Length: 407
Image 1: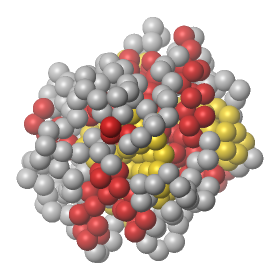
Image 2 (image 1 turned 180 degrees about the vertical axis):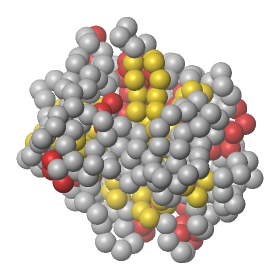
Image 3 (image 1 turned 30 degrees about the vertical axis):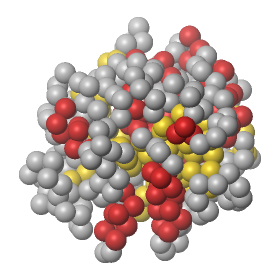
Image 4 (image 1 turned 135 degrees about the horizontal axis):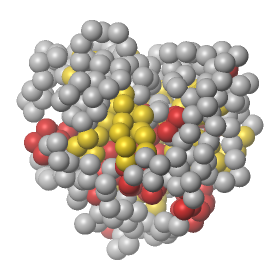
């Protein structure tokens, strides 16, 4: 079996870390389409049934399909992401980033604290009251009704997703409060209720790292994302070319995925399309007035992109045993892109009242504050819907952040 060794440059905890990742189309059931150059990786959440959504995290696995864990971080950490996207670590005004996921992660606060102390970033205290009323950045976990109990039952796959989302958001904006809203299940009804709760509790940004194939009737759920003044980010999916919902909603920022590369001195080099990212034309969503491309009559996916390739994935600490493993995982997928995009909105100070976050990108985005990703593809469509080009394209949208000016 052929092995391809790839160097991932990570300056975790102040050192360069070379990670050898093995690519194999046969290993662990990972298809050759989605085992991109370097590491084998697998979907964290199993497919759901009708009227359910699947999380978009992908974990690096070994030749037997088992997730790879380590005693210390072996993926990219906060410094690398701030270096890549030329961002500060602190928002100019108080911000609450909400993470919406399904099921419960019973140890998420202690795991977030472990992540923070390991990388030397602020350890958030637990909120003593409503998160939006706190005088200091804090962490709060509630159920889909906004209550601290009862919490949903635990689920190992979604727990790893939660760990990725919460740690990625805090790494991006280190003086932001984090509100985790846990839905009772991964059904549309429960996750949409959790989104509404996040908005009601005062979230300035809401990250959603899940999706499903588009379907007739999806627009009936759009009202749950229609919260002007709140930046709502949604991961575009990990199945390659094709549109997913709720990323296709006209009220959200659809976030695609890239592969991220550094120079030997740790500075940003470039990015290319991660072949697993979703993109395309919505079959049901009307084109928003702020979107001016000619690729689709309806809504075009995506708006913006950030790193998603598991080969350049994040170090994630999760103490809940997933496939018999716990500790430091390497996780990617567009689940990594969405909370970081939410963090970028927070670092820009949030969005104004009556404004949709995605519209700001099309107003503020320039070649000075966005990296134009012009190489790679996520399918065979024959157009810029699946091929990166100079300027706007489907897989990477307007590009990736170069500072927070576009947000």
